[in-house]
Image 1: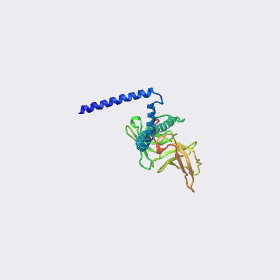
Image 2 (image 1 turned 135 degrees about the vertical axis):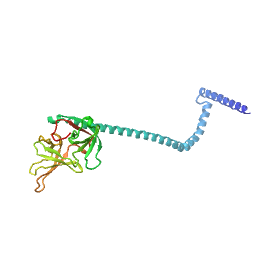
Image 3 (image 1 turned 180 degrees about the vertical axis):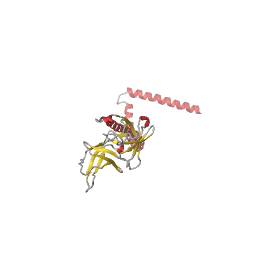
Image 4 (image 1 turned 90 degrees about the horizontal axis):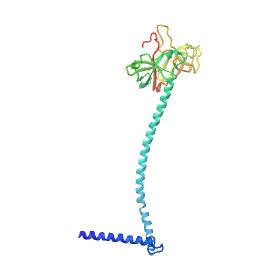
Amino acid sequence: MYRKQVRRRRAVLVALIVVSLILLSISFSEADNGPLHSIQRGLSAVLSPLEEGASRALKPARDFVNWFDETFDARGDNEALRDEVQQLRAEVADAQSAVGENRQFRKMLKLDPADAALAEYDRVTGRVIGRSPTVWYSEVTIDVGSSSGVAVNDSVVTGDGLVGSISDTTRGSAVVALITDHRSAVSAKLLPDGPDGIVEPEVGDPDDLLLDFIDSNTEVKEDQVLVTAGWSNGRISSAYPYGIEIGRISDATVSGEQTFQQVHVQPFADIRNLDYVQVLTGGPARPGVPG
């Protein structure tokens, strides 16, 4: 029974194929106004409204399927764009970081002053790897130490000016006591020809220093440059060699009959945002300064 059905289906399929080939041959060979073309046009006229109605009826379903396809495609595009934005953001951050570091290094290359005194020091470049967690801005840790020739009391600078001095070392790191530390006191000299004073921090504000012991009768002008005094009497010396730029005078006032002026100094070095520093190592001996 099953075999008879299979044979019957095959026979029907073969017959349909033969009929189709015959109709195609006749259709290609007859003229446009032939009977087959006329029948085709008639069926098209009858079925066209049905086809249009079915197309309209199925349009919401097609739109729904297309919406899913477009939504998934858009989600994929969105994720790809998000990844691209993240990558570009990382590249921009790296580029900006490189620009900032390059700017710092260029400044450091210009550290050699006209004064031959600082030219006698070797410079060891270090990166800041730790910062003081308090508002005192008292110290930072750098990634160079005694194995690089860094010693206690060595001066620390950036391409802008004085930062502080080394207070402690290990073989691979060192602690820098900043000039904004509340224990800091730097002997300083106003250019071009004095007077001398002591620079101390304005506690909690790394953008402001105080220049003490300037006589109230001494003329101090805004924007005068302040450098380390570097004095020595043969037995004791100031903590820093002469000529390191500290900052500029931002304000100088005399109140009442006070003996000394209140002089504010804006440091050249950006103490809040130190990334790279240089340690002045070696150099001539400074009497009374261990190191």
